[in-house]
Amino acid sequence: MTEATQDRLASWITAEIDRCGPGARLPTMRELMRRFRTSQRVVERALAPFIATGQLEVRRGLGIVIRDPVPSAPAHEADILLLYKVSDSRLARTLILEIEKRMKAAGISILLLGFTDEAQALSILSRIGRFRVCLLQTHFETLPLPFLSRITEIAGSVVFDGISATGLRMDAIGTNWREAFALAWRNLRAAGHERIGFLTSAHSARPIAMARREYQRLSDAAGQGAGWLIELDALPGSFPGADISTSIAGLRGDDGALSVTGLITWGVVEGYLLDRALWENGIVPGRDLSVMMLGSVDFPSEHLNRFDTVGNADAEKIDTFERVLRDRLTPDGPPPEVHYLPIHTARFGSVDDLTVDVTG
Image (tube, rainbow, N blue to C red; front, side, top):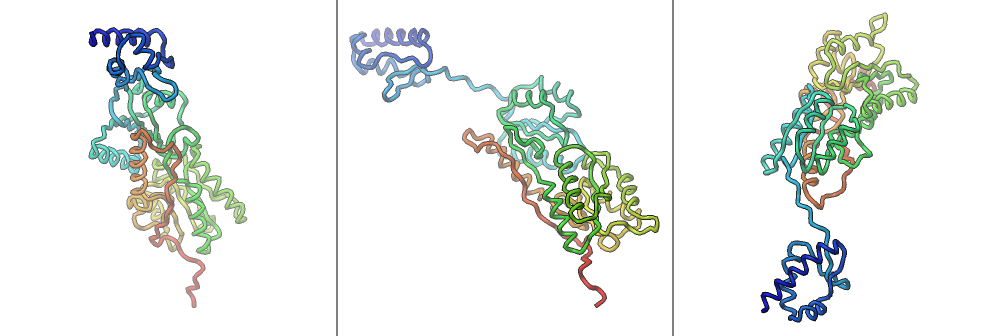
């Protein structure tokens, strides 16, 4: 009799859940006991499976409430999708490979997908499933809305390499290159340099444009104008060596003398290209021209342990990406934000201090 009553009560509860829907309340425990003429223990046994599966909830002051159906967790192809624009940047490749190695060592599944243009990226994204996190690396390229929309459809969270995507509900990790440029400028000015050039990309990406704007602002404030701004028609990391050499040659006046005493570069990520361009123009850095690079202070292929460098530390950058990705894989992780990397200065002797009297 007891089991029959429990079965009859369970069938009634199932019907009530279907009929009433989420948010509705079932009769109280006492009312169910009276309606089915049974004990509290039998009612509790009948309710237990529904409470265990999340269909019912006992709330203080409200009684027995029908809950929203618990959605089944979607299957994920991998924990992390690392989606990257194919480029020649050694720094970009280093980040990709190091993150892949660290995630796999921690038992976190990761899928690497490279693309060459937006159409190919959208084609790839249309054929894959869901991921818990997407790490997106576009190397200064713009992010069209259909592209971003598709990424947010397949990934629970998005982590962006660079700070071009600020203002969106995603983590962005990168360096404030405007701040780095200002520090390099101050270093040269403190060393007595009053005529300073800037060699960089002509690309319209926000970080690049802000660094150019900072050069123009500081140049105007110093009264030197912005006549020594050299803009190359290529993305950072893709400057042809011949263009660098030709641009530096253009810094010489009709008398053969250099029009500047200091030069800041950003986008020359292979130090040998700058070194060769200077050599081709008969310039010894630190003697004929003081040179400061914007880049990674701990990436020797950039500065060759020869050019003074202002920028982020690559090791700190990789650590930051690992930490943020782990946060995104944690349900109760912190909200998305912009993560600015600390800025450092590494000195290797490519800046001549003009304030020192060498004749005394």
